[in-house]
Amino acid sequence: MDSLAAACRASFLLLVLGACGGGRADPRPVVTISGSAVGDEGAILRRQMDRFMELHPAVRVELRQTPDDASQRHQLYVQWLVARAEDPDVLQLDVVWTPEFAAAGWLSPLDRFAPEAAAFFPATIEANRWDGSLYAMPWFVDVGLLYRRTDLVPEAPVSLEMLPALARAAMAGAGAPGGPPPPAAGWVWQGARYEGLVTVYLEILTAHGGRIMDDSGRVVVDDPPGVDALTFMRDAIRRGVSPREVLTWHEEETRFAFQNGDAVFMRNWPYAAALLADSVRSQVAGRVGVSTIPAARGSGGRPASALGGAQLAINAHSDVPDLAWLLVSFLTAPEQMLERAEAVGQLPPRPALYDDARLAAALPLGVRVAREAVASAVPRPVTPLWSELSERLQIALHSALAGQVEPGPALHTAAADMNALLERSGLRYGMNAP
Ligand code: GLC
Image (cartoon, rainbow, N blue to C red):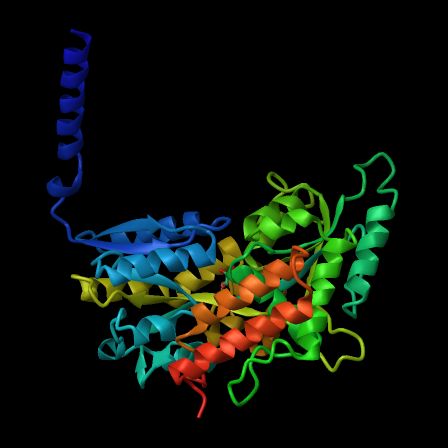
C-alpha cells in the first residue's frame, strides 16, 4: 500500500513538474552556456543570464556548470566536443584553448557576425584567431597577483628572495597583542598537478629571467633560470614556507587558507580580492595588499603576472548558433563587463572601460596598475598543442615539488618530451609566430 502511494505521489510530481516548465512544456528555444563558478563567478553569470532572458523573453538560457579545476574542465570539453554534442552552445574557453579547439574544428568562426574586434586589447583578439578567422570573443582577463597581509608585511617585497624571508619573519612573529596567533603558512599557491601550477611556475620563471619557449619555438624550461625557479618553489615547501598541502591545492583551497588568516602571502587571480574584502566571509578584510611577484635579484628577470582569462566561443555543432551569438555579444558588452568587474574583480578586455569611473571603483588594484598588469602579463605559448605540452610540464613540476625527482632532471625530461612532441607535430611555432 505504502509503495503504491509512493508511486502515485511520484507520478503526480512528474506531471506537475512537466506542466511547470520542464523541457517540453516550455516552447522557448534553449541556449546553453558552460561557465565556471570559482568564487562568485557563478552568481554573476546567473544574474546576467536572467537579465538576458528579460531582454529576450522568447529565449531560455541554461547553465552547464563545469569543474573549478581548469585541466578537468578541459577534459570535459574534449569529451563533449569529440562526441559532437550540440550542447553547450556557448563555451567558456580558457585563454590558452582557442587554437586547439579551432584547429580541431570544434568552434564556429565568428566573422559572419561582424564582431567589433577593434574594441578589445589587440593581444586578446590575436589569441583567439586561427587561420585568419576569429573564433572567440574575449570575456575577462586574469593576471596572477601576490596577495599579502598588510598587518604582518606592510610593504610588498621588492625581490623574490624577500618573499620567503618576510613570510618566515611573520610566521615567527608574536601576532597582535590579544589577537590571533601568526599564520601557520608563509606563502600559499596553486600546487596541484593541473594548469594552475603552470601559471604559478611561469611567474617564478619570468622572475628568474626564464621562458617556456625561445623565439625559435624550442622549449627551454630546463635552462638554468627554469631550474632555479622550480628549485625556489621546491625549497619553499622543503623549508616550511609553503605547506606541503599546496601540492593538492587549486585557487579556492588557497583562497580559503588566506581568507581564514592562515597564510602571510598568497598567489591568486583578481577574483579573490573582492571576497577577501568582504568582512562577513573573510577574517582578513581590510588587511590585504596586492602586488606582482617581484624579480629574483641579479637574475635579469622581471616582476611577473601570468596572463589568464576566458573567452566565449560557439560550439561548431550548436543547433542555435545565432542565438548563441546573441548571448555572447550580450555577455561581452561593456555593461556586463563592468558589472563583472564590480562583482568579481575580473578585468575587462576592452581598453575604453579603463577610463570609466565604475571600473576605478571596482578594482582593488587601481585602474592604472590593472591596465599595466594586463599590458605586461606573460602569456603561455599560443599553440594548438598547449594542453599536451602543459600536461608534460605539470608532471615534471609536480614530481620535483613532491621531492620525487630533482628539479634539473625533471625539467630536462619534460623539455625533451615537449620538444619531441613539437617536432612530431611539425608545429614548432605558435600560431601567431612567423
Ligand atoms: C584561471 C585563469 C586561466 C588559468 C587557470 C589556471 O582560470 O583565467 O587562464 O589557466 O586559472 O587554473
